[in-house]
Length: 467
Image (tube, rainbow, N blue to C red):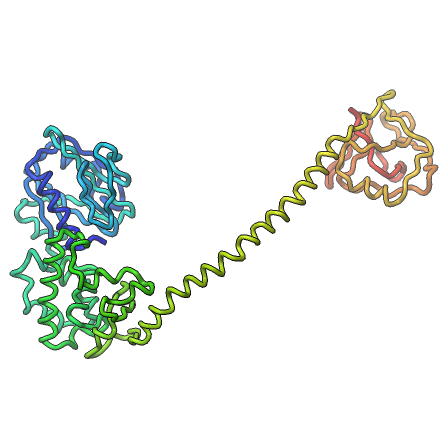
């Protein structure tokens, strides 16, 4: 999340390129999170910006704004991933920097919520982007010089860099003595101090040699005084560098906190670092330097120097071993699976091709009756296979039947090949005058079909379809 230094960087670019210019055009999408959750819409923001002259830009902690020649004014918060882009300018701080040649960048950028262009030649084009949509853009209807006396700025605490008259040692002592939360949780509370985020809080606690889980009211006045001086120094230095951490001092914790492997878990002097969760955020600290001197918040996790050293030593080799164990069996396993999968598929295709290439024997029409072959005897097993088959092209014999007339039952010859077979199962095909009909469970027989099933014995097997 952009903190006090990154906000100061954006205000620097807005003052440099936008202040004093008139906005010719503005457009915005209708985002229910970025605009809607603070009581405005994209269309209202675009209307408020169009034709207005930018008078000034300022910041308080994580909030920043631009005042116009007429109210309402624009107050913004980046949330987790918000940012201001200016066409042709690298406003990004170092961790977000991307080398792009002039004229080759896509404009407006991806995830743009609103963008504007000035009337000067060449125009200045500005865009507010936010991929995760936790940022907020609102309109504040008030005089431009009193914008900090209105919400949401008036509910926030003093800025350590801007509000040097409000952020004093007496102020910090009163806040720490009146509460019992962990000291890091107090620093992250924007109602107490504006602009301090996760990495700034870890940095000031490291330089003050204070444990992040210790209750804020358990420190001595001297410890709080040291903390006050460090807050002022760290915030001012970060703002002066415009958030570019490549220019931060080498002895800061910031340069060594990001790699949690064997190399990144030590300070240059060999002191191990540890990571714990405090105030819902991951905290980096040095257990050997930031020792507990008072009461700890409930549920605090104890991490000793030995634990931190073991974590740093074991983390990197464990990753290498896991990578080796995972990569070795994967290659043969994939080859075996590929062989097992390709072999049966080829055979299956050949069998299907053979079955499809076999010519079907068409049924001959002779006075509307298929021919019957005398003396063609079947085995019991063959009869069952034919009844269960779904192949309509399988030939079968049809018993000879007497001439059919409406209103009379059909008489059939006795089965010369043995006892009468079982009745056909539901779904089997039977003969009718018009052809074969597939019967289903619960359906009525055809009107021309056999009226009495008990009087019409049939030969087993399926009958060919009359084509």
